[in-house]
Image (cartoon, rainbow, N blue to C red):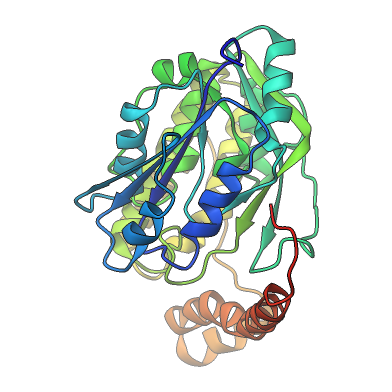
Length: 342
């Protein structure tokens, strides 16, 4: 066993008392034999730290620090880790038992620490067994430039925990950007990607991404600090892609990327929107005319852009609350039945 590479599973946690136990259990259940688990409590105000400390052992380290955001917590965990490979895992997400083992077998076959490994993933609320698998154009082996073009032109992403990263790649990519209160993972893995020789997609093994709610750290909404962080991340995405390939197709992908997200900045901050317009002009194009779906267009006509935009942001979430509560009820009922859990 000692000849096998060590994998560090790094879990930043903030006010995650409902989920952190199950997340740590999914890390402990990994079939890859050599692993360490490091939980960094980012100054939680609930019982996250107490729950995590129930799992402390020779292979599970739990530390706490003053609240400074998810990126800072991941940097702290990374500084404490000893692994040859790094698995980032958010405190409310889960891994199938074979996820890391499947990727490590692929890494050993590749025989290069500069190959970045990704995996399948699904959304879920409470029950993982009913999660629908929906492959995207990123679910295959890709070069760094092609991966970024597909992400930015088709509005796609890979969830944080899908990646397995070698120690060499983390060193070459540098630390997580603590300025970014949103899309810190998207920006970080761009740098990891550019430091790599390409992505190896591993079909076996699964990551379960708990659908974020309005209270989650990843929800941007109309938060000015998060919008500012998102703008920084978008600028960096464009910079990274053009640094490896500056062509008509990559500039077109960047323009599509801006147009996919520019509505997020209206009507809350026209200053940031103007910066997006300038970015589009520098790419040789322009932002499309703001447009809402027909379901919210009538609100725009009656009360203006602001109320219409907020309705489009909030109402889908309100409608989904019934689905979430139903899934929660079924999960609660099923958890009372003795079953073997991973």
